[in-house]
Amino acid sequence: MKNILITGGAGFIGSHVVRLMVKKYPNYQIVNLDALTYAGNLENLTDIEHASNYEFVKGDITDAKLVSRLFATHNFDGVIHLAAESHVDRSISNPLEFIQTNIIGTVNLLNAARMQWKDQFEDKLFYHISTDEVYGSLGETGLFTETTSYDPRSPYSASKASSDHLVRAYFHTYGLPVVISNCSNNYGPNQFPEKLIPLAINNIKNNKPIPIYGKGDNIRDWLFVEDHASAIDEIFHNGKNGETYNIGGLNEWKNIDLIHLLCKIMDKALHRAEGESAKLITFVKDRAGHDQRYAIDSSKLMKELNWKPSLQFEEGLEKTVDWYLNNQKWMSRILSGEYESYYNTQYGDR
Ligand code: NAD
Ligand code: DAU
Image (spheres, rainbow, N blue to C red):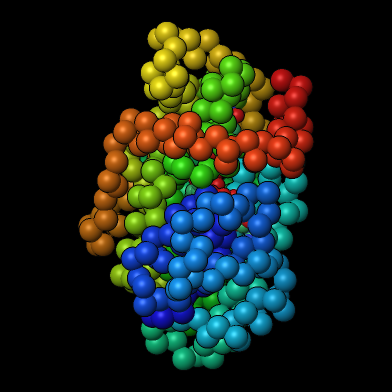
């Protein structure tokens, strides 16, 4: 494959995928299509922005004409589709944006790929990046597998589930070559500080309360973002047409336990007395419809494509803390402007 479109490449996971592809495959032309919403940040890509095999295009995937023009001018062989509205809390306050980007935007890309490839599908691939949240919420035991029934419970996960169904519909109806992966919670450098880990790091650093929803007993399965990017690379190149792959690190944590571990790492990094950061933990009103537990079985990916995560959680968290503490300018630019007003609406009264 030569010409690859990556959507959402200025966001958290997308920027790690773009970097990996640009550096690892100098013969590929990588086009990053991103609308630069509040979550998109070209600062995430300054180290590769001048690479000869990289092009950034600012554009919105909900704009069908723009998307089909881009396909017509670039002759893409493959698509790795990450662009999305990604934050569950925002989907609760504004579902429509999620419907537009995650569903309509995905259909625009599917249509454009179909039109360009005109049934000549050899060596073509539409790779859709999705989430474990489409499977709903687990009880105390069990893991999500690729055959778990869909049961999305937030506007975000419902919009992602819908896009997954549409991608599969284009495979069955039109024969479009597709692959889908559903990944667990990512963490690492460049994550927008509305998400639990970077939000907590920033609040601890600034001696602000760490808001924990409900009792803090919800469970998430955490994966370092570069490990997600390496899984995407593997699946893009070696995944089977029409298949789904679950991606996760077998790394379940109760939110409150995760935050205690993070506080311990922050105490050390900030040369504070042990237990100092944990004093900032504050229990707040629960998220509406808060899914209790996610946990992913990624044995298919591990067995069939030989993928495995590279980092232990504590090591990954330490790396993440170091990155945020050494990139305060990145954070302070985000903390001004749009993010600030969102943050005040979300947490102002708590
Ligand atoms: P993010 O919010 O950090 O980034 C999303 C990117 O998409 C941003 O750069 C944004 O500008 C861009 N974008 C949004 N709307 C757009 C539009 N209409 N047109 C073009 N670009 C648009 O998200 P993320 O956390 O990096 O997630 C990326 C993908 O991975 C999403 O599809 C998400 O559902 C999926 N995913 C995320 C996680 C996670 O833990 N963050 C886990 C599993 C799957
Ligand atoms: O599982 C994959 C999903 O992980 C992705 O599809 C989403 O795009 C991504 O945002 C993430 O969703 P979560 O809702 O799990 O992530 P978030 O960081 O928002 O929350 C993690 C857990 O922490 C969740 O149980 C809610 C809780 N939480 C979150 C925030 C922001 C808090 O207790 N306090 C907070 O302030």
